[in-house]
Length: 153
Image 1 (cartoon, helix red, strand yellow):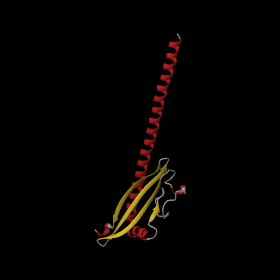
Image 2: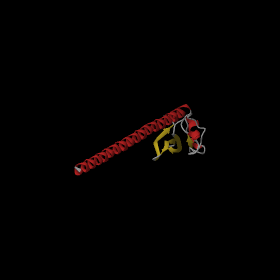
Image 3: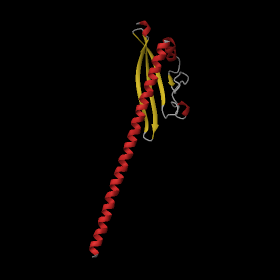
Image 4: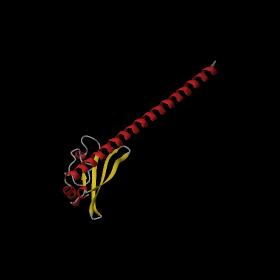
């Protein structure tokens, strides 16, 4: 009779061990799924904010190309673009200043502008990057756009 009780206890312990392993695996998979979903959402939002900045730059160029070009030839040529989208914050976005975030989000957006001559006409390169930090490090969405003066064409 003792032998049967020992086997039953062993079977119960083995069953609990297997159930525990299954529960741990499900929790790990769920955690990874949520983390990947959040990363995907943030990448999508960062791409949206990057495209928003490119569209704003395009509008600034169309309004007054000379003024647009002057914002590049002045020093510095890097701007931190908050939700307001204006030329007020020159230089790189500070990692310590939350007022440089895009609204109340975790994202920061910078545009670096360079100008060169292409066939005697100014060619302006805008490198827009939207970035954010999380527990896995720094992530970013980046795009490069080229602007020319279309009035001469």
